[in-house]
Image 1 (cartoon, rainbow, N blue to C red):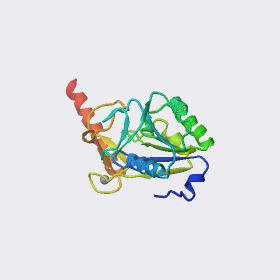
Image 2: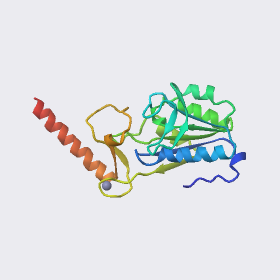
Image 3: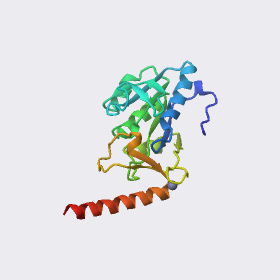
Image 4: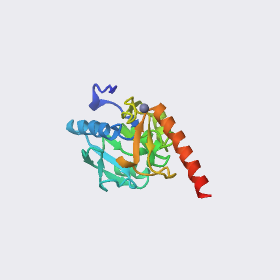
Length: 204
Ligand SMILES: [Zn+2]
């Protein structure tokens, strides 16, 4: 990790983004940073979009079930209202928030809050996901974490969807996605395209 956190307790506000594909450990990294802040007696709050109800409606839960209690919010504006008195604000699954999340994070940082954001950098087609590119742009620090490609063992680049669904907003379960490196991801997308074409021929 490249965090430079000397004198953490007296630092001015800042924005940290932890992003990567599915199974890259970004939520675990968010939890690690938040836990450490909490050990340092800092006031910590964690938010996530209400739509992420994968395992528990009120916990940030990572895939290995290390949970921290979080506050589900419908809109990014609610984070401002609910984070009064916080030293550190964590935001999980940030890709699902509206674009206003960028202004919210900036405002918090200017107020002296350390904002730690975790989210998917790309969707299942390899396109930048929701507000993540803008959040990465305004961040003081960006950490890309990586899963391992299930095909070849290289560092993974993107999350390939295994089920046939065009909807961008589909929540991640292990059986629905696989982390792939850039090369294997490209091959998989081509393969999906071919399969879709043959399916549509078959349906005609
Ligand atoms: Zn690969």
